[in-house]
Amino acid sequence: MHRVFWKCVFALALAAYMAMAQAEIVIDRTRLVYPATARGVTLNLRNEADSPRLVQVWIDEGDPLVTPELSDVPFTVTPPILRMEAGKAHALRVIYHPVPRPAMVDPQEGVYWLNVLGIRPTDAASHQLQLAFRMRIKLFLRPTALPGRVEDAVAALQWQLADDRPVLRVRNASAFHVTLSSVVLSLEGVEYRHENPPMLAPRSTAELMMTGWVIPWRGTPTLRFTTLDDYGATHERTLRIGR
Image: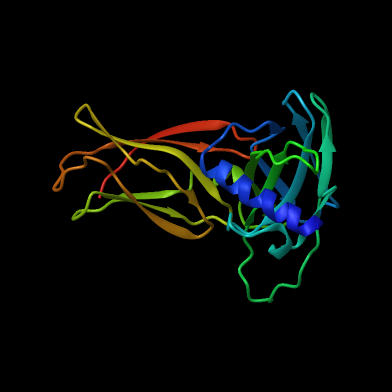
């Protein structure tokens, strides 16, 4: 009965999540960085609704359609299910369980997603439909002794404009994830944007389509982009970019 209940809740939460409904359970951060040697990391929830909420918390590898019971990750969250009274806060404990890694695997930062699902409790006899609300934040698993520093990953990004397509290539050669929040090219007073800036995985290359960019192009465009740090703060950088 318990599993059936939460499956129904999950389905409702997914619908609400896709509709971008305003969350009533607030997380005290927008991302969570977990040092691989830590015994645990604590984060806090707060119920901003005017009545109690049932809350379920779980972690997945990036697929928002995976239900909690089918998610297979090296983490546990305590407590995984709780009741939160209106206006009250509650601490969660995330614990990492190390798994063996092949010796030849290049060490780099991993990324998971922490899900927080809230639903209004109802009487068993009630037939009223209740919407559930879900929030997801990134959880970065950061091994020790990674080459370089996370603070230097943004400055080390390699940018290049394609000659034959309206594409801006960016290479993240670091062992850390870099989250882009905006990308703008300026040339002769005109700005061209990428509409959906990605998170760059470690040692990866992405191609960003620049809306309105005309081929062929001349001159030396100015690139302005912003990134998010470990605390969710925005940082802006500007540089000149060529072929």
